[in-house]
Image (cartoon, rainbow, N blue to C red):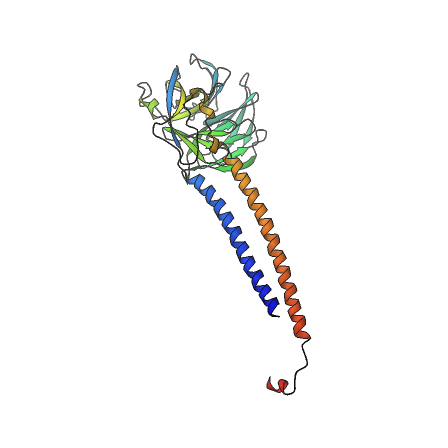
Length: 353
């Protein structure tokens, strides 16, 4: 009896210890993720390589680069349009006006079609790239702000801190990405540009744009483009609101009613260093869009590995707890058996009860 009781106490102690170890492991891993999301992104700046003419009447809402041309969505009711612009000259080679009831917004290329968002009409227009023929439309809930193609899916902003990843065929939502900048949700996400790993987002009304890890939603770079507004021709115009990436990795930036498009490289701001472990502070101007950094580039893989390890720990500890519980039940049953077969009471014991 005493031995069984000791074993039960030992099993209870083991369960408590195992639970503590498991909780501590999960807590540590959760802490790692919180640390990553709370970290300060790397501060970047732009270095102008060249500038090109741009129609100052264009209220730029969406921008992309394809085969030497800019494709641009312009906004405002009664003035919204879809345009093809020759980058080298700024000449508008093709243009189609939107219905006066539509306010043009973000723009993305999908195969041989252009998909153009509208602000409050819950409708995306699908255009033929070759001749700007309207092929149809796609529906969505809420406002449309920015749109880009990451090579597999469309990513859309609506002015909040949440991006939606969408099926390019039917515009259905596949998943959502909450964008976290320095530990806080980053709202007012506007015009977007994508590559296979990152999302570049203009912040509405801000002179900066950000780089977002498309797996985690964490912002790992903040790019200050305020120096472009110091250009005499740009001063006093609208806000930054056009991001495109060339085939060689340079960025093309413009804004609402800007008379210029700037080709720039992204460079780390002197004295800036990230505290999120990103090691990419390369000043190689031809690889701006690939400045992931080893740590930030593997952040998504690390998160997946952590989840797998946590799952394995959960299974192991759960199995051990179940085993210990079964042993305790057996010991209790043995104790009950001993009590039920004890020696007959001696004379007088029953009266004392």
